[in-house]
Image (tube, rainbow, N blue to C red):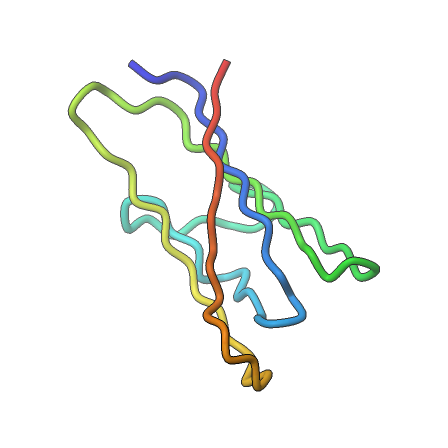
Length: 88
């Protein structure tokens, strides 16, 4: 069993807007502030999304989904989003 998992995702808000009411874990809506944290950083435009997931049993998966509005910033490069997952 992978216990007490926390997922951290750094979002570049110069290129996207995160919809705080859109986050789900395994299809279950989660509430900002009580179920996950979102820390804005206006000076760097890199906001941090922290999601406590709990435990994952062997052979099982957890699906985290949320919506963003991607800015049409004229960049010819795709936006790549990577999160990290860790536990004790």
